[in-house]
Length: 492
Ligand SMILES: [Zn+2]
View 1 (cartoon, rainbow, N blue to C red):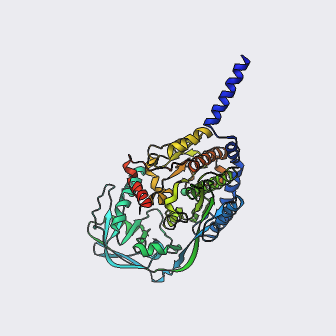
View 2: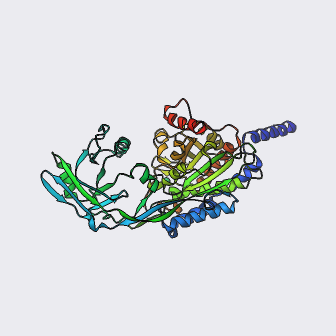
View 3: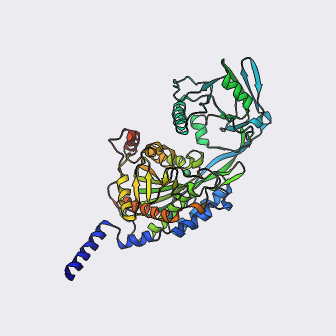
């Protein structure tokens, strides 16, 4: 009886070993501790780093800190300046003394002072008597060419639900991306004063050359003028003169390090793990420290790098770790990488992007021991992470709505666009302090975050060790454009 029991135990042990991590992998996973993650987060989301706005001294300190961790783990520097990939953009302020703005409504001219506007968009701009097109229904159809040479304002009814408003804005945003109006006007009925055009402007010189730069936006805060425009039954015309900013060069940095693989055939192929290290900085006089968004993803990325670097046997493929700037300004850093890849894209087999891994208090209820993956059935990558999740106690799942909806709203998108199977992992999509001044490091669930990080480490290891590279899903029409991009990568 005792012998049979011992045999059974031995059989069970060997079975467990076949299915789960090896002792070396287990030791690697044990390095991913709550304390290590808390350490990184308490620094990245500290007051000293001032919310890591793009660009800022706080962000530069964060970049240097991330590079220091990569150096500590012995990663290979692959940037133009050690671990840094440097983008040199323009940054500066406008001199607003020549600013003028007026509207003609029903034969009356309404002047608006600079103090009652906020400005977005980079270049100098002026127009005299342009037609203002008002879009006031969520299902408005925008015919091609119908906004050419016009000012457009989206002014949806106040009683729309948040979900309907978001959906309408996205649909209109997509329609307007190809329409390219002269200028966008926006109404702010809550705050009587804007920034007066004093906010600093960041200019990507490549964007300016590619398509004339971003469409300028004027946010109007003057309530009486807003009401007059909204109530007008006849045509409304707008005249504006916006002075251009005086730009000085500023350096923005992605931070990239490589754990070189061991397989002679596969070591020149790459699996990427990415996260954005920027946040909002100072907003309306309040520091936004961005602990969950996305110091959490950055901290997990760094600790996974350290854990994988500790393995006695290197993974077969190389693994690239990258922290990107400018996500909060519209995925700027990852898009820059997509245009200027440091590692060959045709040999980059996958990207896992980490966003908001720390908070479990989601608006849909506690998210403990589970991680959502965007574009879950866009590629065959999901099941690989699900296996890693089984071994580490994490359920990797497809969120019924957000999986598809949020695929394009994080830094995985830039790599997907060029064909690399790329997805974002998040624990909570919406949490109470999202983009607020209280997204602080003390509120993170570090125990859960450590378990999630172990799943990520094991998943990255599986991806790096398996010969077969992940593929876009041929059966899903939503993945068709990415599949096509992937085909062009291999056969340009
Ligand atoms: Zn984020």
